[in-house]
Length: 271
Ligand SMILES: C[S@@+](CC[C@H](N)C(=O)[O-])C[C@H]1O[C@@H](n2cnc3c(N)ncnc32)[C@H](O)[C@@H]1O
Image (tube, rainbow, N blue to C red; front, side, top):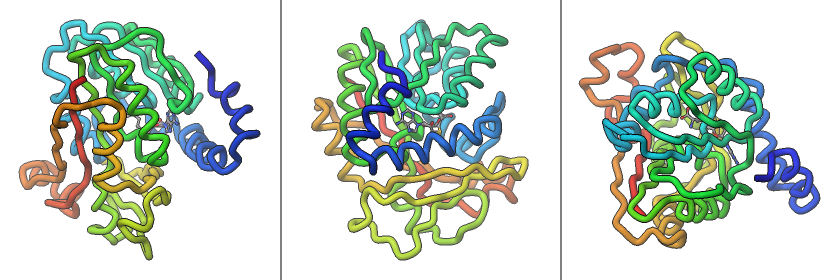
């Protein structure tokens, strides 16, 4: 399995542009890894997206094996283990996020394996019952995302599932206000013309701290075409996630700016 540093060296020579944008993402996560560590829901998407990802994976995972692409500091890994997941491999570009995940694993002893690696150059050994990618694809170009979707297809056992969440492609255009609890800057950007452009943004934690996030813009077509080209030929289940009035009532000050806004997409597709 190539590690990030080996892969990076050859890619610098091959493609400076690719390397620059990827290094930026790595730097963002390396520098903010401690801010991301959480043992209970705290950032907006811990309420608006991740619980729905977990539900899509199933209440009882019954020892199903999981490949977690862009696993970060392991928030999703720990929850899926608590829900009964079996063998678990988490992969992330950021050495710091992986180090924090491993430190947490030493305390918890859930049996999660973490590897620091770029998913665009990653070929797992063996297959998994489930592959997840929670807010990974907003860091990849359309072309890299399509390649990773093909990797996910190969990595899943027949009958297994690929589940991923991404920012809703309309969100940066619908919410132009750069304010809490979530935004992506899209001033002067166009839905079709600015595919593969990186939008900078922030997502807030309930305590008031903001996390730096990025979104390489894609259209609906980019997601569906990528899945088809990767080999997925069943109809994906698609959920468009928002802040419901019920969720807003639990903390009106935090959630109400986003009631009924198109925040995220959740895809579930079987191989
Ligand atoms: C928003 S965080 C989500 C982390 C985790 N999935 C979660 O839901 O808590 C995005 C993660 O994707 C990782 N990432 C971005 N580009 C990547 C790449 N090319 N290969 C592997 N991981 C990547 C980042 O390092 C970061 O940890």
